Image (cartoon, rainbow, N blue to C red; front, top):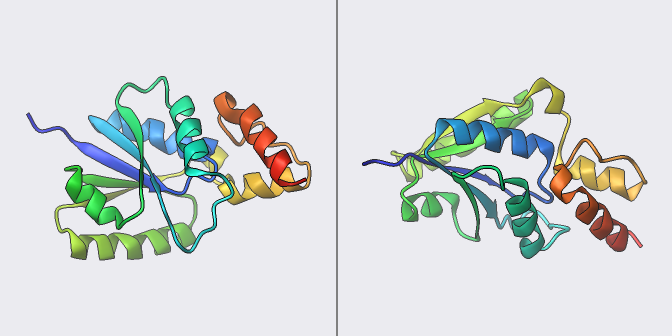
Length: 164
């Protein structure tokens, strides 16, 4: 039997309700979904890989067909190694689409069998980004509706420590 495996890649620094919405929706479309924390050398994460893995695991507990992993190489190499068929990306804006379309073209050139699926962000979540969460915390803003409830206290605590 062929199992359809999708990968939802990102830095998840931290995971947000926007990310979680895309993950939940992808879990209904595929047999298995891997939330993949990618090491992006262009980004300097605020949270450790271990924290992000833990927070994602806490956030996806209700989803039996979703797991989390970390990868520091090319996304397409992970796709090949794990027999995944699709890459799922959330799209909030035209800028997201333009960038992700370029990435999907490169991935298709590297691995023709890998399909990229674009899921438009829920209209109530188009404004949510990990950067927004971190910026709001830096100035004492409310992030209660931006990150999963399961990790809210932990995220606030770590951000308060970092911002001291």
